[in-house]
Amino acid sequence: MAAPRLEKIGYGLGDMSSSMFWKIFTYYLPFFYSNIFGLSLEHAALLLLVTKLWDAVSDPIMGLIADRTRSRWGRYRPYLLWIAAPFAVAGVLTFTTPDWSDGAKLVWAYATYILMMTVYTAINVPYGAMLGVVTDDSAERTVFSSYRMFFAYGGSFLALALFEPLCSFFTGDTGTLSPAEAAAAQAAGWQRTMIVIGLLCAGLFYYCFRWTRERIAPADNDRESILRDVRALAGNGPWWLLLGVAIAVLLFNSIRGGAAAYFFKDYVGANNLLGGSLLLTCGVFLAVGEIANMAGVALAVPVSRRIGKRMTYMAAMAVAGVLSGAFYFVPATNAGAWTMLVLQIVISAAAGITFPLLWSMFADVADYSELRHGHGSTGLIFSSSSMAQKFGGAFGSALILWLLAAYGYDTSAQAAQSGEAIVGLRMLMSWIPAAGCGAAILLVALYPLGEKRVAAIAGQLALRRSSKA
Image (tube, rainbow, N blue to C red; front, side, top):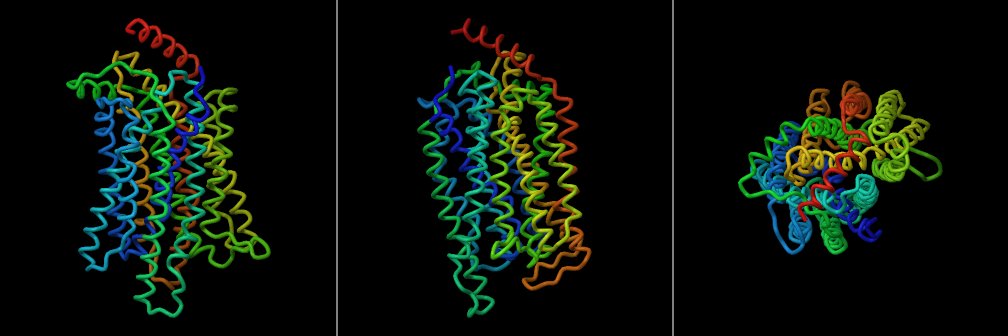
């Protein structure tokens, strides 16, 4: 029996909230730390790497905790209620620039970002694991996952469409201010923008909690089974493959998105006229990509039903990879701005197809593990997907800053970049993310859980669960 549409919408609201923060962190936080907060490129790169690696390590811990949670609302759902407010507060603190010494500010940046990523894990890992317990039907999971990703991209679009205008609104006119006063006004503008975004995100998680239910009770875990769960995960071949896929795809997304602010500032510059008064700014570029992502999500279910999840995933990644490589050759002209926009639409639509399929495949892997080992570890398995996102995001964000430093990128406000730095920006928007697509295709080609095998696993689990009821 299909779940009510309101519940699917409610489930989607959770990732709408997470994605608003995630896209702001991925696309704007490197720029914030280097150009607003005042860290050097090297310090900012190390900060992003260290904090996100901690975040990745904390994901399996949270998965184990969630698997052992017992409440009247279920195992995973209560965290949406408990962590919604801390989630918003931590986001605001992360984008707060204290008027302290450089050393004290660096400590603040580490403390607040570690706090933010810990809170993100505490709410996002249980949220992801819910996909394994809202239904036991693989096709219905793909539908839930499609709602999730559609709203995720909708949230990303909303965040990206609002972020720069809100920052400008709260910053105000800095033309008559001294450089120090203008910098302080800009820092305050970014903080106030995150207050607005944070309040919205907390509300979305609350309604996700209100409108969803946990229906499936996976095989129970006793409280002494942690090592058993870890051993089972380590021997799960399909999980390892999807872990690699998730890391590769997040490298693709985080590098393209995180480099965009630098790319538009120093490569595209004023050569962004689309016609009349319409300009291709970084915010427009990223927001249009989110709309195209949503269109791709809508295609995921019908296409995967026709040719299967694995073939759909590989085809979509191939399109995204080839066109990302082509991005390198687009000139910084007004005509080139149109080409960039078209490529962004097609690349983003292709990438949008893949994300619902990846989450649905992780749910299938959880069933595979339960059938093979006789006990459920849904939270641990879904936390691994979040862990892969963090690894991909950590290395992607750090790689952007390391490469910019290697190419001699100058963070000064009015700096004219060298030819070598411009080449680096073009590589970060093209061939480097394209390599992530290639790695994902190779790994998905090895993934063994096709539609027939998943259906057989679901049937066997249904018999086992009914016999224990």
